[in-house]
Image 1: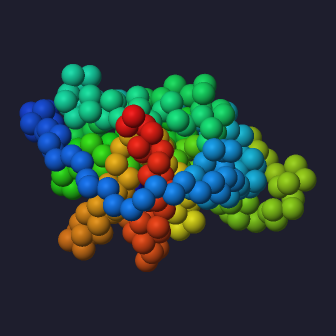
Image 2: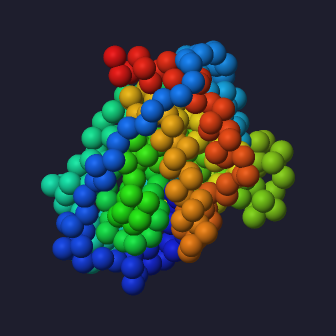
Image 3: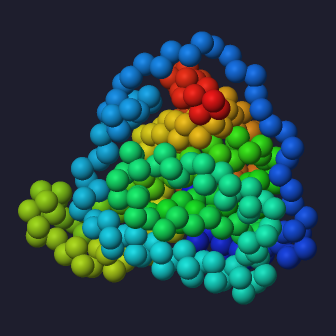
Amino acid sequence: MCWLCDAKSPLSAQAVTHDELHAGRWSPRRGFLLAGAASAVGLASGPAQAQVDVGEASALRTLVPAEQLEGAARQQYGQMLEQARSKGALAPDNHPQLQGLRAIARRLIPHAAPWNPRSRDWQWEVNLIGSSQLNAFCMPGGKICFYTGILDKLKLSPDEAAMIMGHEMAHALREHARERLAKTQATSMGLSLGARLLGLGELGNVAADLGTQLLSLKYSRDDETEADLVGLELAARSAYAPPASVSLWRKMMAANGSGGPAFLSTHPSGPNRIQELQENLPKVQRLYEQARG
Ligand SMILES: [Zn+2]
């Protein structure tokens, strides 16, 4: 999920009509029986209170200035929404699925700052585009977008949609795009990392090119694992049922067998994704119960 694999024409022939967009509704299915006892073990290495263990964010990302990347993302996001609007495929504010997504974001965002203090100043946005693609992403700076395809085809419950949103937000909070771009730049310009770190590179050129590169970005498996776990914790702290992370990825894998959703081409999944999530459920169970009050 996340980045658009078909970046140049994200809507193309797959855009749906305004009426189709309005026909969508949230699946009423909700809730899972929770298994396993709460055993919140503090393995903090992200924010001090974190329950999942994902280590420190990569130092490489600092090679690309965060302000410039967020600015480039804001511009790219705006262009994408404009393109969707011109085709009648941008969900209006009163669209029920969009309202559902924004309600999820309102619960998740208050728990974001410990993972990235800069995010306190982000202008978070959530939009929905009518497209059959199974895709969703969060650009640097908190610009979130879902495609109707991922909601409708996977028949996502609100808990499962929250897991996707948490996963995408985690990519932005942990600055995976920034890290990927820094690595790509270091390689494509034939410069050693040492030279970059010594300030011999041209960061101005790096920034100028960021917007377009954002759209063809592919995350690493490590990024994916991190996003899964940070997203799981964000969702649990927002009172979304942790087991939904497992049911979500089961659906995703099943869909992948029958057509290959866009996000799995940009989000390489390790063989142990579901197992890893399952092993982390007990760590966030208490957060979930506390959040439910
Ligand atoms: Zn991802």
